[in-house]
Image (cartoon, rainbow, N blue to C red; front, top):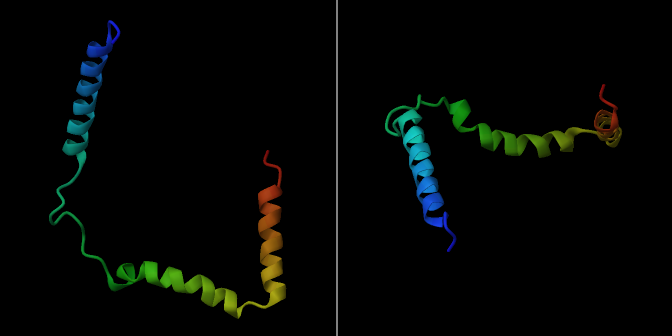
Length: 80
C-alpha cells in the first residue's frame, strides 16, 4: 500500500456517498409518481415490433431498394 491509498479510498467513498445522496434526493418516489398510461402507450412496444416486418412485407423490391439507396446516400453524404 502506498502513502495515499487509505486517503484516496476515503475520498472515493465520500464522493460515492455524495453522488448517491444527490440521486436519492432528485429521484421521484416510485409509488404513485407515474402518470397512468394510455392503452396506446402500453401497446407501443408491441406495435413497433410488429410494424417493421409488416411494412417490409408490403414493400416491393424496388421500393426497398430505393429506401436503401436513400439511406446509403444519407450515411455517406459529406457533412459541412
